[in-house]
Amino acid sequence: MGVGVSGWRLAQAVARTGQLGVVSGVALDALLARRLQDGDPDGQVRRALAHFPDPALVDRTLGRYFVSGGIDRSRPYRPVPRLGLRTHRHGQELAVLGNFVEVFLAKEGHHGPVGVNYLEKVQMATPAAVYGAMLAGVDYVLMGAGLPTEIPGLLDTLAEHRPARLSVAVQSAPAGQRFYVTLDPADLLPAIPAPVRRPRLLAIVSSAVLAAYLARDDTTRPDGFVVETPLAGGHSARPRGALRLTADGEPVYGPRDGVDLAKVGALGLPFWIAGGQCGPDHLVAAREAGAAGVQVGTAFALCRESGLDATLRRHMLTRAAPGTLVVRNHAGASPTGFPFKLVHLPGTAADDDVYADRPRHCDLGYLRTPYQRPDGRVGYRCPAEPVDDYLRKGGAVEDTVGSRCLCNGLVAAVGLGQRRPDGYREPPLLTLGQDLSFLAPLMGGRDDYGAADVVDYLLGASRAALA
Image 1 (cartoon, rainbow, N blue to C red):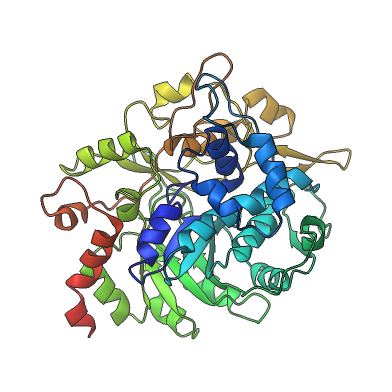
Image 2: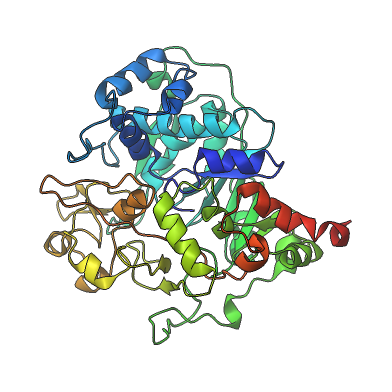
């Protein structure tokens, strides 16, 4: 659902219906810092922070970032520490607090379940982010963009507030050399709280083979799966076999990319189907195939409670209703190397001319990849950073062609884009799933809708069939 799109308001609205509401856990440190610099006008962030178990940690963060009344809109936001293998105390604190705030607010005032979604690819952020969400009582952790083999153990460890570490992949490192990012709750909190409830882990996979690999033993086995098709928004798995592209540059998927749901079901763990599943008939078909249900993203991204900038959301709805909104799956747009869906809306970073005018900054760096330098030290690079910098760090020039800065673009999509000292403002970048056929029956002639309307649409016409 993108950075901040599935925020606490949306997750709370879904959870109030009794369904699983999920917040996006990516870049919540930056979102917290920028909301505080904007003055936290409704006071919700500071109200949530007042419930954090260490007031001194909260006070340090407020002292760094909170600006009463908000900073001048012409001034840049103060930067946050970038991810790295070496522990940065302030960065850890900000990540813990950002995730705590989002989950605390999402869970407030109801008894519905709330989850948080992370990218396995962003390994260096995971321990602190997960710990903050667990301190707020998160019920589920969902993780895709890689195989979360170490996450079951990480959840066990952090539930007991024990020191934790997570392996980090470092390119060009010799085989057998291991790198880790660590988190010690005792270093963060002056008094260790009572053990917290361990959330359930749902691994996001694109094949029965990957599901079987994770389910093979207790150390890697999740509590369930989200089986995602290539139609889902954001990142999708690469096609199996040789990469072929359409005339528009989209990866071509074939029969080998289908998922054998019977084999997933035979693993004995609950699973949900995602990607183009927003319809009562999809829910019925999923249940008949043995799934516990479906996961829906795009319909919620376009609803009233979405964290998207309100003007951008209205523009997308206006174009989507008559079928003129274009969403393409670009093979090379994401620095991760995974295909990524871009909404082609004028003025956004999907527009080649708009993006060509963008200076290639890399000041958030969530998708930077660690690599080992010839001298043995670890550096960080991203195909979306300045090309000369990437090449100097040993990157290949072909990786940079068409590569978008997802970090800055997605943050701008929720109205928190960086303002540069020279007056330049980051253009937004938008992502949705490619199946928008649900909008006409869901909206039923209305010009807007809410999260509860999505749930009613999914369940209303299918209750009889599911009874």
